[in-house]
Image (cartoon, rainbow, N blue to C red; front, side, top):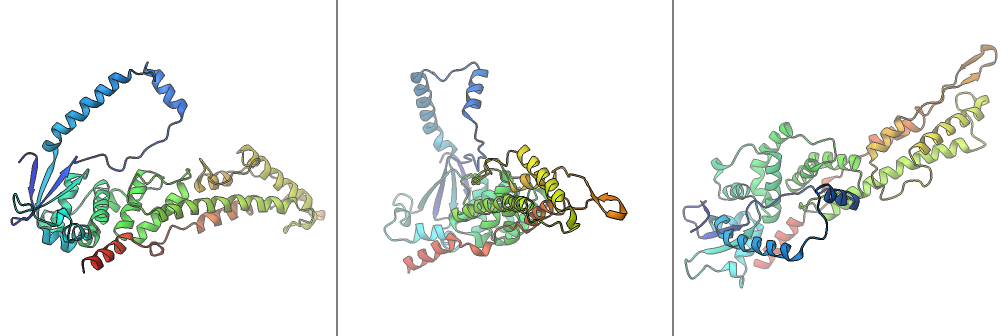
Length: 375
């Protein structure tokens, strides 16, 4: 039998065949402009007018090579159908339904045959050892990358509960070696996936908050991970809402100082110069950043809550004096710091991550449907 074989259960009655093992996982794609692509081609001395026949021949050769080597690369796991169906909703469905080919043993060898593709072979081996209670063969610590792969497997095969004993240990270690990053990155999205699948509410709220706060794009790059669309949509909506709140705050103060009836709360006699100085400073700084005409709107491309809040906090402060009658002149105490900047900080501090209990796990529904169908 070609390829790698893992004997998980000595009395195995099932062969799980993994084709195309180790396919690229959670690729963090970056979007390049057409100009960048063109420049790249020119820099390499190439053109876009490649010989189509040569390209087709190369593709055909690659396809033939892939077919010839697929059996050699495939990994086989000899497992127990009883363990699989007990711990996994997916296997309960595929092996338990009448009429499914997978639900009948082969006449050739008397074993059930299942096929899967693309998984990391080591991650799949760890999962199968867990499902077969081979606890001593399960690593006590894993990298963040491998934990994410385990989360994807747990979601697909609906066996998260069986992994609970190990996920706590894995995540405790990952929190030390690969803590939730402050920047919007691949690792941050991996944490969202891990926290969602393994029901880690604190990590879920923390990771989604940082995406809302740091993401500068209109959508979240989910990399094909099992993060429900409703979570991605809510994350994007919260980014829009908070950015709108920041610009609404600036607009509100601008309207306040533009109002002819504005009264300075520190020194009423200086209301006009107070409003003039603050409105002028705010307008100049907003214009410098290009936020006046037009005002930024959804989807706020290339803007993050973190970026805009920091830009506003860095606004230059005007300084002027008020006449204090018998006391002479004194620094006027009104400032952008105590008005616009203070309110923007409040918006930032109120920004919260998503709450896990607001979302329903589709895997639980799938298992309920499967159980009903079998019964």
